[in-house]
Image (cartoon, rainbow, N blue to C red; front, side, top):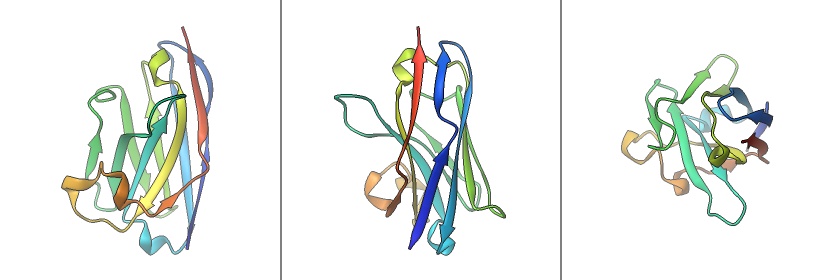
Length: 125
């Protein structure tokens, strides 16, 4: 099993920045790909960004150029730096992890077996 614990959410004004983190523990060999998804009220959960152990990354079009995902393999931790935040970025952000090694499907929710509890990010206008 893998446990994922998110931290760093909060309230920020539009145009501001926030960084969320996710620490993995347990069978970290199962966390080759780690990513972030988000779910706004009344909407479906959507892909935000992902990073592989190799360093390959993938981003949703809506966050390209504003968000940066990174990971520290020694700490089994993934980070999401969010800049130029917009009110539409408001959502619960979920960390996810899985053993997928195919770059082309990093954005597919189904390849992630483990999920965190989520952290709220609120962007005020």
